[in-house]
Length: 214
Image 1 (cartoon, rainbow, N blue to C red):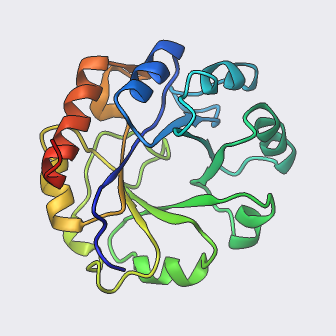
Image 2: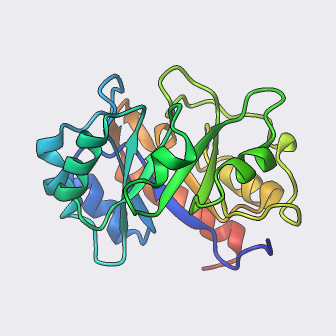
């Protein structure tokens, strides 16, 4: 793929309406809600619609699941009809694609993991999300070695970079990896599950600086 002119920004693990609204006002492209009960950023199904309603019209809600029952995913999609799906568990390509929605497939970048193999295994994924392996399936606050990722000229699917990103390192990440987008969670938090508008602003500013956008 060719490098993109503007790196897309996703803020994940949002749990409060005011932080969804703040992220939207900062011009992010996507807001993520964790539908995995074991996560400290878990959003109960009955709160999804309220949170997603704070996203601006051109900001995409993303629902994150880990080996969830199909009925649970369907209920969440009913609550947030315009959502994308994001899968972090053992879901196969058919599991991810059965809902007729665009989806992101997370790739835990452990030693020896081949991102291009995951591209072949999930040819219908809207994008692959390269993340640090974690028992919590995301939001670990730890970066992985970006040098293990294939160059942009070898990738065939959009790549979203996650794992330990914050305002201090996202510029270097963008210059090194040239991803389609970046995904941040713990890097804009004051405590687990609680975002900071100031840190979100710093993060988005760092991304735009890396892109050369004022």
